[in-house]
Length: 398
Image (cartoon, rainbow, N blue to C red; front, top):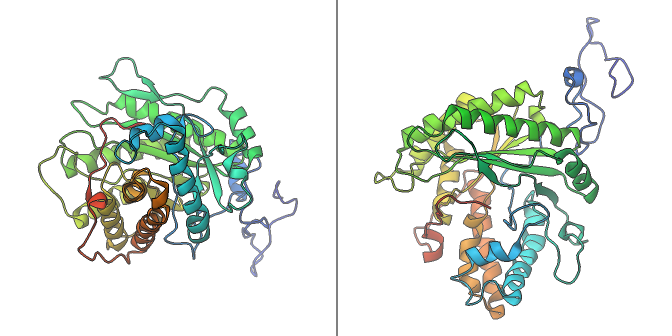
């Protein structure tokens, strides 16, 4: 008898018991018992957080503030809008940009994308942005609390935030959140990433994912191999495979329900300082090969981060990945922050009069990435300076 539905499994024509899919809504979430092995007897999570018919939809990060409940907005905008506004940290500059992108997300992304945004408090009140009645999107919280030095390593880090995580997840679920996100950072350098750093971060990701599911949140698992360094494409592929293999072993060790997770990895690219240049097709082949060797087919969706690539490079690489001839049992989409906003910020220039141009630039880039997530993006050969400018930041954190 299924302990979730209270009735025995059905029988096929030969009299053998067969497993029926659970009679629960597709958006129903976990009942809090995933730590018990028998949870696999029925599927309390939606099989597919990125369902068929929604291919080309994305996870949009906005804003990229640090900490819970949106973090320090002024710090984020100040570090990214210096070129757009003479006084990026002023209240007018910060909220002018925020309001423009909020409108974009409401009018464009919520109707065309399966959007997941981080929480943002409005200027006029302290109510959460996710409570805005015009917004019909799914919402995630950034649950990690940044890196801390990992003793005994070469300046490697582990991620903080497990203390009190269950209580925070329970509260965020009440606030209306559907997803959680946890970013673990690993870098390629002399003897890095070490086995200690890989195992420590993999286990932290797995503990976070298990706690999320116990509280009804879908965990977005983000093990990022950052592009700092001069390593080539082949070495990045080797490290990415090693990291992902450790992550999925840890997820299984912690009895995480893989069908109720999303993966947010880096694309396999050469280091920012590498002198050899690679084509989108080479990046795609290395990326899909690494995923095919390490990520179980049970994982429904993979949403790539942009990793400091230019807007155009991020779009071209995503398109090539979706056109790669290798088997791809997952839906492959994007979760870009900087690579969705650079052209919009350049069009805005800190002036309220540029609101329409900002919206058009943002919508153009979002549509290009939607097409790339289906393998249908056609590069016209003409791109703006903002869309081709590298967005790399050394040791990038948010």
